[in-house]
Length: 146
Length: 373
Image (cartoon, rainbow over all chains, first blue to last red):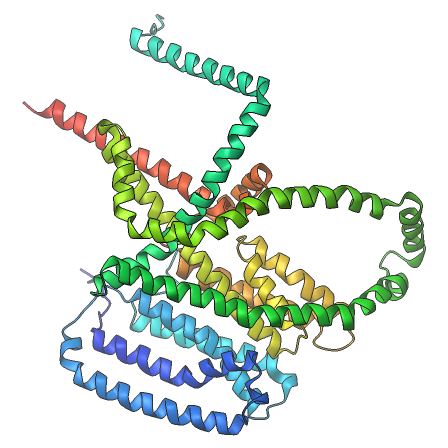
């Protein structure tokens, strides 16, 4: 008899780690995307702003990692049937994060002519990452979803 | 072959339905005869229903947040309500405070910088670039000038538009003015009010009505919350994307995307038309193809990511059904019908499913009773 392979259900610790480090990777683009609309570059030097954001990201990452490690045991004991809301959160920040990376490209002096190309490339890369993450950690297979 | 005659029971039922239909026609006839009187009554009812309806919809959006705070131990009700209320008012106020000047500024700049360019384009360039030839363009222009068709249309449409806007705006403005007070009282005594309403219903139907109301509240509430999040998210994404590609009036066009997204499927198409036309005419900025690509990507995100993620559980209706309901309710109730077509369709589905479940349950009970010794 062929045994049907059951998907592995991850603990809250693993899911929290994925969402937290995902947020931290996209933190600078996420902030940039909103400040860009309000023309922050007219108020503060963009390089200085980026350094401040980098420091803030590093500090939050360290604090978050410590909290995750402290709570590791209790989080490892928590298991949920699916983590659909965590995945929704990840998708939402990725959508804004993609745009944020384009803003970062602009701030770092990239050629504006290639913005559309960069955007499409980033969409493809991030959609692929999301599909992989969704099927591996969040029990969410987009291709099978009907 | 002998035909099965009608039983007394089915004959009684047919007569009952016929009497109800006849009575219905009678009431409609009476209403037509005394239309002025009914209009008077309807106006009074509308004046009450609109603010209460808006407060009810507002409560459906806010109440889960209060419940969430209470679950986390932030209470009593007055405190959690005050917290949510201050937060909501603060958000609305800051959105108006920061966004309104930006949008007004862009509208002003449009009329100063670009309006004349568009007029000149229609008068000069369009004549030369007209797809069916400049001869046809001249004939059309001559026809427009001779028949005065534009002025006549404007003369007919504008007064009607003002009248319908006044009819819609006045009750809406009253509702907005009363909304904070109504919301505070309604949210503070949410359970008490629901309980009081339940006591009006005959005891025989109380359980079913309570179940149906709760299902409808969940569906409509989820739809409203989802739609609000969707509008904000898409408006923000569109504004950022438009600015990134260098579109001049990115706030205005992004705001348009957010607002028009209240109409499922058609909203994004409607919102894409003005920026595409603008980029087609404008001398600087991105080309219409780039704007079209951005809108297609936005449409992809809306249809494949935001819409299913935010709405799927509560509103998984087939797109064809939503489009049909938009056309149907739009022709019935105008703009409001178009906006509320999806929740109405979802509510009809909830009611249908409820009665289906009820019938199934009844059948099960009858079968169980019959099989019992």
